[in-house]
Length: 577
Image (cartoon, rainbow, N blue to C red; front, side, top):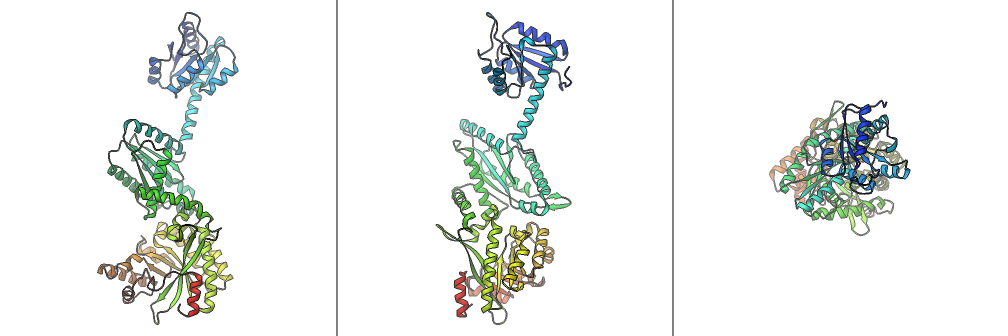
């Protein structure tokens, strides 16, 4: 006797138009099985379907042997057609086919159409039938488990991309019939790579699993949240009554994702950007809706991250632009389209001389003209190409500085480094090699990193900054005043200067409170023993106020616009810079 036993009494639904077969099956089953219940239907009809619905674990025994003349037959002369119909009507039911003879073609066809086993009717024995039914149930359970694994993310247990797109397609079909709108949301982490890079992939997996559990808790039974891939999650909402309802849901999602996650005793804070696509035209395809939500998500990132945005025509324009840039930006380095321009700094002590420049990346795009770094570097960061681009700027800037210091020995160079480049373990060694090759004093180099980026993971930032400090270069906190670094963290960072965000300078003369805030930032920087630089200076009035507030250096159009290396060389020769 078969060693495996079912978890509950077996219920068998026999589809056969031959009453003799029904009596034979009943006798064979009861010979070895006391807890079995046989239900017989001559055809697949509403009553047979109801029997399966009432008992989900029921196994179907389908008689493929033609009935004798004068007896009823099952629906459809072709047993394969009936098998396919049963499988489509009751996809969770295990099926065993009773064959008239040992027919390999029939057996293969039956298994291909969804049967779990085939038996020769004339050779039925109690043990053989019992074993076939039990194994059919077990195989169906295994198939269901494999199907679940194929359609669900193993880490979070959420539906995966394939299942989400399938449900979206079904929802669109319902929307076509009912006219009810639906909404799709696309979520992406703002700083997930930094977690993986600094804390390890196990920590990243823990954050994803925790977030998946939180997001599931926000869903109604009719909603779907899926892990679309990597650190991306998608949401499907039906039956929403207004745009405001979608916005409130997106806000709750952002708040839930923003709660700290504890990993190895450390509280990790993550932020997410969310794009919303409202679907009022059910004729659109699932791929189109996903693209629209994705485009809105990138617009949220462009507008500062940690927020949500609705898809609109501007999002569509930016999405098309992004698709074009994605393919072009990877080739920009190879094609020699990247440029480095230089903007001078003015020291406000003593004689007020220009003693340094900041290297600013530009892209000489073949059709769109000269693009600033703000127009393409966020995309480069997302695509993972910011490190090689940053190395290009570093090499270009150091090579130029080496030539310029022959004429102006006190000249310094400031270079922006992205968060991904800051955490590149090869950067300190590469920087040291290039400094030695150019015979440059490391103290002539200022590396700038944004306060917002440093605040995302201050512990790893401190380690990275110390490694760079050991090379001998100077370090600057860029966009000072708009990030989230505490004073305690500021004291821990091995930096030499802060560069105040241009928004504070822009308000000078228009708002007395703005001057007071800027003055407080200058005093804070000096209290920490740091030089204070103001950027975005565009008028003599702003320059005069910055002198009065005690700024050490300034940068902006009032001092000089960014120029090419050749133009700066001409200024040096003329003695203007």
